[in-house]
Amino acid sequence: MTRFRERDIIESPNIWRWPEVYERENEAQDATGALWDTVAELAPHGDADVVDVGCGDGYHLPRFAQRARTVVGVEPHAPLVDRARERVAGLPGARAEQGSAAALPLPDDCADVVHARTAYFFGPGCEPGLAEASRVLRPGGVLVIVDLDATRHSYGSWMRASAPRYDPGAAERFFAGHGFAVRRVDTLWRFADRTTLADVLRIEFTPAVAQKAIDGTPGLTLSVGYRVHTRREPVGLLRP
Image (tube, rainbow, N blue to C red; front, top):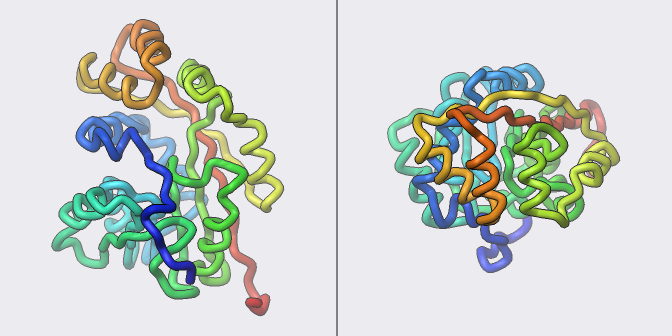
């Protein structure tokens, strides 16, 4: 088990700096339910032990806890860990721990599903996290990585404009090369009002791109594409 060192963690500015806005972003995402349906199909978690890597303030933990036997959220940023613990307080089988994808504070072979949603696993460079996920997964367990698809819809073009060094094709080739299958999912983000929409886009994109996105979204919904990468741990092989 690798030792977690908070100083080694790269900041996630959207949720670290604006957790309340990010909460409203989470509320807006996947208004059709297509993304959650896909995760449940590809990584069934009924009566399973689930690890949510990069759980932030634990927004998804109660949803997993509805069906899973246990769910552990792992998050490197201490203030978010505190918020996650408050969210799951009194919820049986759910807890949050400080740690990182590359240093999970968990024993070997303890999980049936490791889930990461738009956190850490963005392509080349995330090999330590892949190794840690394999360590904590039981034989037959599944790692499911949910990432925004920067090749689809206006949202994807705004992503590429804000992060020109990010190559979505290279990321996809990376995961394919590490044995992952991919499922593309289209869904909607639906906001309560224009102010919330604008606030969310401003924490996700550079100022100029955010304004372009706000001006280019006349209503309260956005079409957004995701890639769901999955890899199952082999069964019947001896661990090294």
